[in-house]
Length: 284
Image (cartoon, rainbow, N blue to C red; front, side):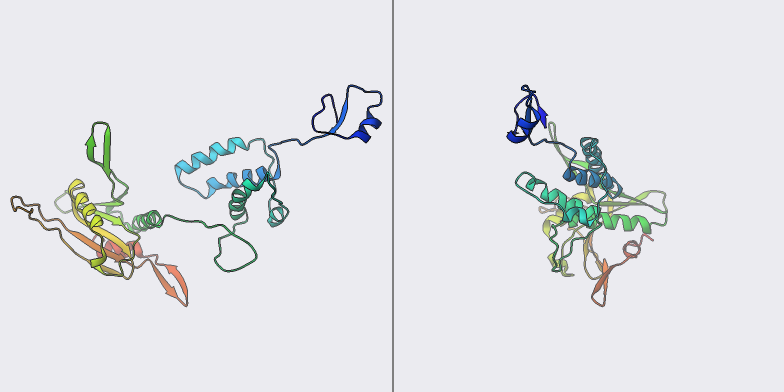
């Protein structure tokens, strides 16, 4: 192209032909950096669909902010061939991981651990959070209307000037009793394999439940683990070391819940898990 400044590479032959009478121009070839290229178009497309499959408010906010950076990027029709044509070089190598994630979303792919010609990335989940959220939703689904079920309720536990520490059990169940008062049951979910042996329950978990008992006025507390269905009742010692005070009757049970069932090598989630838990606790 003709340009008034010499930027880039001078194409001498075409410069002579085009600019014999235009001494002020240079016929050059130069790289132009534009935001609207295929890599940005793919990422912009993926960011647009993320709010449709996400319900986390923080992530939704991040998605909408990112969309502002891709406002001037053209909408691209994406299929498998779009990704087959991509060639990554030194300048575009940093896009590779993001493009692979976008490919999973846009083509509705799922990571597969079996061997094949397509490489995939690892998608990791915090199973503690996933187990907690799953149990909470299943309990809400099983609720017959007589219970109020909270998740992640917090209360102050320790203070020092402007520094605070909080207690936050996973699930608190509120039930009205005959006397007209309210009874509270605390459930803390743990994604741990205790092999259906109560002896494998950690001391830190039990100490945590003891604190929940006092700060949430709980009638009972339970630790909930995945495994073969079982419910064991347990209690905390009610006498202090020097036997000068009665600590009261505080109980902590252990729930081991069937979350899935296997059939011919295929696993299926048990849809009645919420009902089974509430019935086991005598809340339904």
